[in-house]
Length: 488
Image (cartoon, one colour):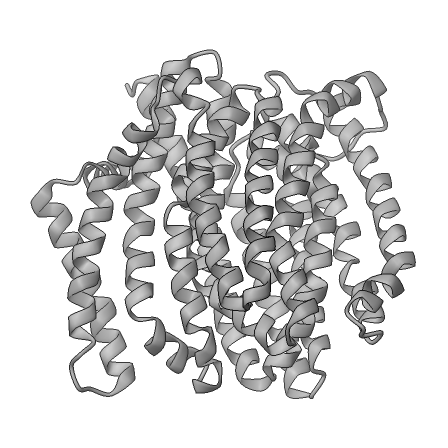
């Protein structure tokens, strides 16, 4: 008979695998679509949609209102909690959309481009659609049913890909990108509603809602700060520089973002409910945080180092030479995203232990520092703006890890040590990949050789050095394989 801890470990690993498969499956499809669309559309079209997506992303923060995380973090949740949040969210999202609809002309005038008005009004319908699936997502996360996310996300991604490409071929320009995003989230929502059994009952409690809001509003404020600040660079680039500059900046961010954000969000969505169940046991939370940092660094480090040294070849092959100006941005973001495991794991520990007040204070401090750096850098050009985000990343790492010195007795230097071995192996791999890139070959063949060689070098080094995370992942895979064999 399996022990409870082993079963729990396998459950977390299984859900994490489903979550990573969902995120990467969707992003691989989206990456292929974006490659096709980037070749069909001009950089200016991507710059236009980037301006509107900034508005949509900030609006999306209000959709959750911090209540989704509150439902996940709360020790005991029933139908009354779920229903209260659902009805509140639906009304709240319609109010947000109404505000966006009315203020669209003022947003467009900020960019001196009134053609943005219909694009803003149509694209921001995603706010209303998201409001219908928010509680479903919280229900799935809390009950560790991440297999449901896989089918919903993949279905939406495939259908939206077909729609986007067809419209681009028909010459619909920026509307191809708008339709792609709407179809994606709409399909995702429909699939979740058909596959998840939970339905809102006709009940509502202001008292329950108030309790959840008391925890959630701080996370909402934190997320809003993060969204506004995170998109502020794009707002300023769109205002002060050209749409092409914004397109190069965004495309440079896209590739490392796809890799890291999906690993991060996968770990985040699985780790928060798991940690929340152990919130009274600090030692368990600390061990989970350490494991998350080690494993996610082991996975992310070779991806970021490898993408950094192959950046030029990747852009030429994937997007064509007209996008070469985004290469230095891509390399900057590779370095910035490399340290995201510390961000995610530390913040999850703080949220899981119910310290949303501390979470908010951290966000305020980080954003004040980041805003100062942004103001200083913005007059020196788009590259300076990108570099300021890199400095902000390093200061944010220290700030996020500081509270867990007291909460978990987990010091910043200990966290860096936990990342150290994987970073060293990835660095050695990157040096090898860089020199392989000096070989005179067809660019596609060369990139394939670099990718394959990098993977082999990293795995061999992990085996020789007996890397802890490498061994841990092998054990998890073996246990899951044995479990499947027993079932069969």
